[in-house]
Structures are given as structure tokens and as C-alpha cells.
Length: 464
Image (cartoon, rainbow, N blue to C red; front, side, top):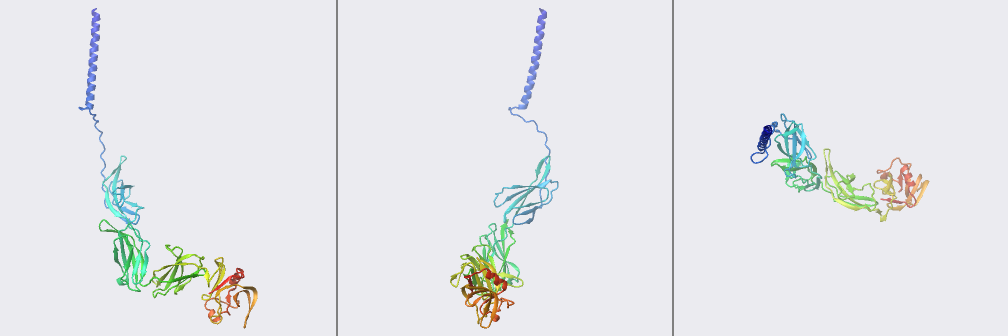
């Protein structure tokens, strides 16, 4: 019995010892938990591991531009000791509302920014950076304000060259205005700033202070005023004017698929250039030809009914310069009529004044040759609209005092016709004034042969 009691007491004592140990362990765990949670039950982060110090990054100095054009800006700056490279930011001061765009990073001390807008202010920020432990550490950025140059003035043109000189150009909306420089005899032919126009919407200038016969050169420079006193300007566009070299008031007419122009001579002009276009507002007209006289008929034949626009420019030319005057634009509708009759697209034309003959076949010129017509004043070739009524080969032309064998003969008026003239060694010029024919059209052999082979009875022959 006593042995059983002792055993029971031993078991109970072991249980008490075990419970006491568990209670102590639980208390210690609770204490640890309380220490982690804190007095208010808030979780407390463990103390962070120490971080490496960020590197010191110097600031960019000497930031400026190397070149500036209408669409690019080239930046330069001084090298920053210890820097890995440089980061460039940009904002368009006109459009971006102060928001900068990161353009990229470079390892050099220059950056060329391209595809920019002409005449526009741009702000740049350039910051040096150091690459360390896989990170990029940027320093304090340096600000630089600049701008692209305005575009060169376009479409500069003369409007008047009379008692005053007037010029015009296309508007540059990015410009503040325009500066006009003038070179003239009055300034000793030195270029001087003559006028500042403070609005980009004003695209013309009238110079009343000119002397007839003097040459003036005007250079128009678009500029933009930025940052107080800084001007950003274009290279400038130049044009010459001669006061008094004004537009001829010409007349224009049409017949036989041609256009003829005439005007009064300008005392300052040394020649006249004629241009035409099918579009009145075309930027470029087609050059038709030049003359020193007061009339001109382009050699080009145009389709019947074609509407054309012509300009006649007076030109003043010396060994050192060429100056173009102003011109009016006049409209004409091409006509195929002459002597009151419409001419078909296949015909022969003879010009007595030019001593030339042409054959047009289906509107295309296939023969253009010098000729000798009737002796002037004594045996003139008749003028008018005629039809070819007689044709022959290997025949003899007989007159009161001559008998001339010819290979080709085409009669168009009485005893007058077109034929070869083997007895002549030359054609054209003024031969007809002292050694002309008896009224016929003497023609070189190769040309008369081609005319004979490409015409027939009834082919119109127009003599004027």
C-alpha cells in the first residue's frame, strides 16, 4: 500500500514539474511576442540593414550651343569629373507647358537635337549621372534656353518697279517680324538695316525713297524676339529692283495656232523675256523666248481653244548684274483662224518677214526651213489663205525671161508656188530684198521634197 502511494506521489510531482516548465516557456513566448508587437499592438519593423552612401554627382557647367539652324540645335558642355554620362531633357516653350521630355543619355559632352520646329524656343536641362551598383544617380540639372532659327523667307517677289519699289514674300508664322536691309547707290552700295517690320502678318514693303534708273537690293530677314534682347533670325532672302523697270502694258492676240504680243519699249530694258502658262496662278511659267524688240511671237503652236496666260518681263543686263522688272499677266484663247478662215491641223505656213516656211501635219511641225520669197516691192509673194491647186515633179517653170527646171512644184496662187531652186546656194536672211524670186517660194531641195510628199491637192498654204 505504501509503495503504491509513493509511486502516485512521484507521478504527481513529475506532472507538476512538467506543467511548470511549459508555463514558463509559454510566458517567455508571450513576452517575446509582446516585445515584437509593442505596447500599442503595432507591428514594429526590424532595424534595416545599413545602405551604401549615394555617390556625389557634379553639376554640368558651360552649357551652351555650338550651332543652331532651322531644325536642329547642337549643345555643348564641360566634362564633369567622375560622371559616367549625361542625361538630356527638352521642352518646347511654345507648346509643352513646361513639361520636359527625356531625350536620352550620352557619354560625350555634346548632343545634336534634330527634327525641330523652325523659329521655336526650346529649354534644355542637362544632368550628369554616375552609374553604380546597377543604378543611375543623376546630379542637379543645368538649364539652358535657346531657339531654332526662323525659316528663310520664301517666295520673295517684285510687285512694283516704277516711281517706287515694292516687294512681297510669304508669311512666316513662327517669326516675330522681318528686318529689311537695303543696298543702294545712296548708301555707297553698302548693306544697311533699312526697315524693321514688327508683325509676321505684314508681308510686303514699299520703298518710296528711290531714284529712277538706280538699282536697289533688298534682303528680307525673318526674326523672332526671345528672352528679352536675343534675336533669332533667318539667313535672309534677297531681290534686286531697278526703279523704273516697270511691267510693260502689252497687247496679245492669236491666229493660226500662235500667240503674238506687242508693247512699248522701256528705256531701261536691254531685252524682254516672255513666259506663258495654262494656269494663271502657277508658281512657275514656261519660258517662251527673248527679244530686244517691242513684239514677240513664240514659235510654239498651241491647240485651238487653249486658254493661256502670258507675262513679259523687262530685263536690264550689264556685265556685272542682271535685273528683272515686273510683269502683268494677260489671258488669251488660242485661235486657228487667219484671214477670217479656220485652218485645219495640216497646212503650210510661209512668213515673209522671217523668210521661213513650216509644214504642220496633224498639228506637228515636220518641216522648218529658210526660204527666199518674191523680190521685195517688185515681185512680192502674195499674202493670204490659199489652197494648193497644182502639183508636179520634174517640170520646167517658164516665164517672160526664164525657163527653170525643178524637181518639185506646188502652186497655190496664180503663177506662184513652192519649188526647189538648185541655182541658189543659200536661203533665208535678207536675200529677198535684193535677189528674190519672181513671186514663188524658193526652197532647199530636202525640205521641198518632204513638203511635196506630205501634202496633197487642197492643202492650205498660209502666207503672211
